[in-house]
Image (tube, rainbow, N blue to C red; front, top):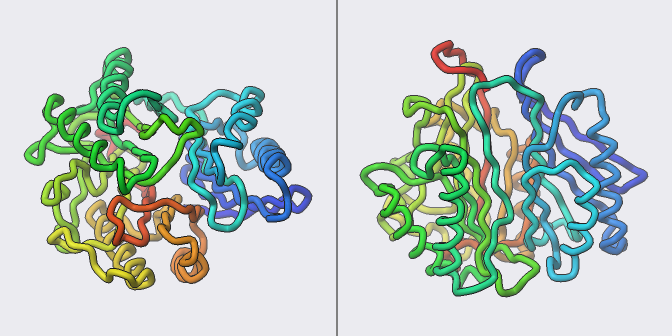
Length: 371
């Protein structure tokens, strides 16, 4: 994994970039944009971010790379989304998620962007982002979102059970609405043949808000067409983590996808939990962060990987007051990995911190096609 950091002084923007791949093959890039200047208003911060984004995409390093997925983190979606959506009309279309998860560095906007170079791969990659429905409660909305997503997959000759690799559920007021999302997902998965005896899907379920207060749940998802069962391995780390079904939820801790030239690992939202499903170190965010990292490390190891292969990390904190100590701790542990720290409550009130990540390592198996 290669790492670079860019500082655009004229725009008050810093960008962390990781890249994986070689000339002649698909190159993957993960970029984290951080806007500086707390005294600047939202309009200026947005303009500065997009100026840096446009300038970076013209950098020689990114020649041939195109955005595949973008996620914007806003401090106040109700007052910021409309202007962002207007500006996005001038950029190439890609799956784009816009949600209120305030950046903890004090800025009003941050961005995670995933780009790849052109590929002639036999695989088809489908990203869905920002899906929401403005009627019904969280259970009804989740039910409808998943049904709509299944129709979308069917139109591409895919299914949820076979082809969906990763989901994200962003839940407004997660302490209240998470249970409804979990219930609808469980029933939907049963209908699709997804059980604790087959498999679920790697996922994050976390606080996140749309500009429209009637939208209680937002869905992002990623599916790949063309994979064979032998290319997909679900990650459990049972020495450290419990099966999720023990406490009534239906997602996988992580998943690795084998391609001929590389292996991608998607680690679900992971917190301070033990192999009995119990929260560890209640009230101690530093100890929870340590256990969280240990759990992630074990999941990566099960996929034949490690921290050295991380391409990006998103850290969710329940309490903004914990940001400084956690940032210092994780910057020291992961000094050259693109990261975002955002304010977002985890699905259990006693969980103070959660992280998700993506890793990429080399593979050499001619049995599978390259990415």
